[in-house]
Length: 189
Image 1 (cartoon, rainbow, N blue to C red):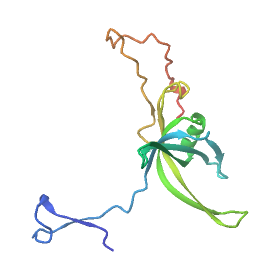
Image 2: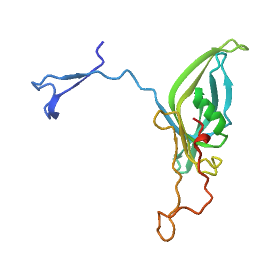
Image 3: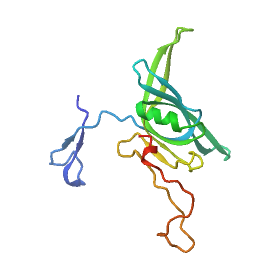
Image 4: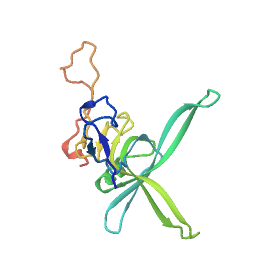
């Protein structure tokens, strides 16, 4: 089965049907399953361990969008998403995330099924299997920890704390505030 696309060399304006040039054949990717969400936790993460000792965490995230209805009134629609997190990232989520917290979630869609023991019916659910999580919001919302990113290979780091510019415009003078330094031993990874 040929799933490729023909592309012509040298950005020709000629129609491919009239051109003498040979087409280049490029094979397309088989598919893409990627989800990116920014929303708020609907519940505290529920942590479990599988029989093999693997950590798994489940929680929901609400995303909202605004739109105008047919009469021009501003409306808001909220979608709820089931999130599943495995391994070390699950440990981090269970430790730091709380209901109401704003997060960025990246992952893939997965649909699973099971037989309902009461009705005998086959049930289905679609979840987002999280591969990357970043806590968003102010330091107040995150218990003084600031913005953090977890899960992605190159993105496992704390965000640099920012300090406001002084009235004199002097950026080199150390802050006189009581901002605590984050010790290396305090990092969760």
